Amino acid sequence: MGANFITGTGTDIGKTWLCCALLRHWRAAGLRPAALKPVLSGFDPDAPQASDAGQLLAALEQPLDERTLEAIAPWRYAAALSPDMAAAQERRQVPFDALVAFTRRAALAERGPLLVEGVGGVMVPLDQTHTVRDWVAASGLPAVLVAGSYLGSMSHTLTALESLVRADAPVAAIVVNESEGSPVPIELTLDSLLRHVAGIPLVGIRRADPAPGIARLAALLGA
Image (cartoon, rainbow, N blue to C red; front, top):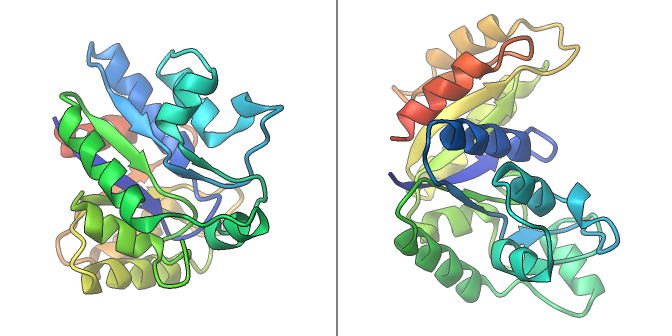
């Protein structure tokens, strides 16, 4: 069992949905997975259940309270902006070194599968000098890059992948979440990506039947 970093080509690409699906899959198999959403923007303390952290806790069947929120998402910001902007509005900042240390400690402590969900896309700024990509690379965790099948996703996916590769961040898999209403069939997206990703495993998640893709991804991640 290992830890993996779930990142994406952009925001609202399905990272939290994918994490929750994996967590439920592993729990159904009798495993004890864990998940973190260390940096969370757009957090409404009056509706914590709607947040990414709240959804992860629900998938883990853990209570939602201040203690569990602090454990899973210690850096929470109100504004629905990139973390650097959201933190600045509160006269705070994302403490990069502490964030990396927190991630590494969690990866060492867990005996079952652990998912660390990033924030936004690969190149979202965390502070004045660091992006999510820097966090992935410094954590040492294999990345799962979540993409879509919408028109234009090919360029976004390959650009995000190149960014990770340039930072020497290992990529465990690329997951293509089928985009609702896309004129591009997911099969064509997968076939095209296959010619450009240098042997990195590709997993397609189909909206009508996501279970096979989730099971394959869980197996690729070693759980």
